[in-house]
View (cartoon, each protein chain N blue to C red):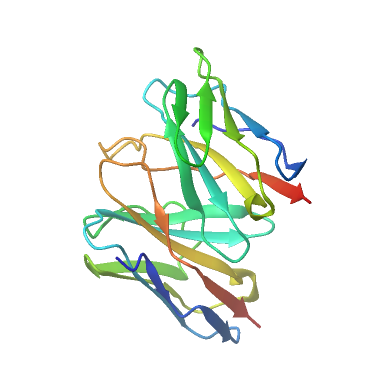
Length: 113
Length: 116
């Protein structure tokens, strides 16, 4: 398996623009997680899905953030409108139901100017 | 919520054994202890997981005392490539998701620097 795939790897956008981050989990994994990592706040869990259903989005910072998982092989994290404070590395991870081991993607480095 | 406390940074030299201790005084009965490693510009990578006593794999050993209020990750004979951030996590059962331990909370981690 190719592992968790994220795109794009780098995104530079201007404040106010819409940003969409994409993730393809490992085939067969039941859970999908979205994290955000910054120097100040470390690695934060934003939302996670179980069998394509959002279970907990309490980590989503505000209404500007939304995430979807239309099928078992694809998820998106959207920020609209983006702000400079959203600049961070966004990771997607997936895992099997009966395991604590999460497999992380390479991340998307987002810069909002 | 079980929280973890670990040293912010550690230095070591090539060939030495490195032990990183993590405190988790409020660990729950059904919580497992998991360690991840993160290299710069990469996502975290699973190293090892345990519940009690000792667990060993090809990469590391994990020592957990009987009270489970702490754990120690042991890296034998480190090399320069082991320079990374190491995270200790405990599983936190989610109130509406029966599959316990989904919400792994990452703390600040320990930045290990291995010197030649």
